Image 1 (cartoon, rainbow, N blue to C red):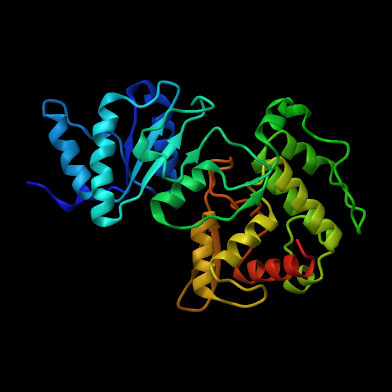
Image 2: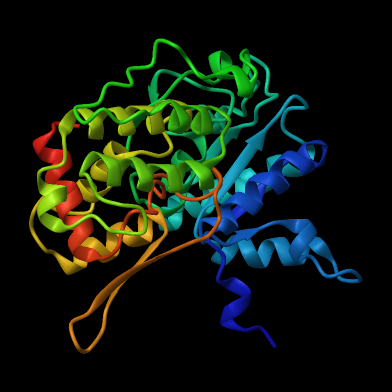
Length: 324
């Protein structure tokens, strides 16, 4: 007996078997972003005709991603693509061409895919929406935030432990030394850098370790220091983390600096991986995913200095005042 659960997939991953490993990695990243992919190796039960199962899914799936790698489009892919295009016309089902990192410079796309806007995992530019975010946009319709990044080719040409740049602007109005934060970020030690961010922010408001930043201190936080911290996070995370990234996400979900908007705060929390809640007594809290790497949502870090919703609101007011 078929159940609704069998058809609760967000995207069908149409691919050449030669590209299986690359597609599995993308499928795992989609799952981390709460997108449910249909992937043959995960869903086809041995001992049953696979063509029949594909036909069932094509009739119910919400979208399709068609992957193109160095081996081009496989013969079975063509049949699946044609079926999805038929569904696209019938119920506006997105069909998203996806170029894998090893796709040729001028990939051979099926004629009926050439008119579709594609996602290019080969692409790294100065200002862009990351390919994974673009793919999720195509699947869900939720437009992500555009962020400034360092070209991946530039980052890859420099060993990680040597990416700290003596030209980094480490200025401080309060005499805070940001060298350690810069070095931790350059080494991609995100958890340690998050804690160091908490420590340097305390120094910038003349507070002691194990203390917290009060609302009035945050509203008067020195802009030079806030800008230094933000620029370091944005640079060394390739635009994935930073206060300015968080601000853009907050604005994109309807938030306004300095104003309490519970709906916008919850949406913001969902986007960056922060759980924002208010209990029956009106006491709020912010909790975080303990994963410290760039597989987490854009804007997830820094977060170690956040102690409540009031802090989040004050932080965005400060960011707005300082024009980050």
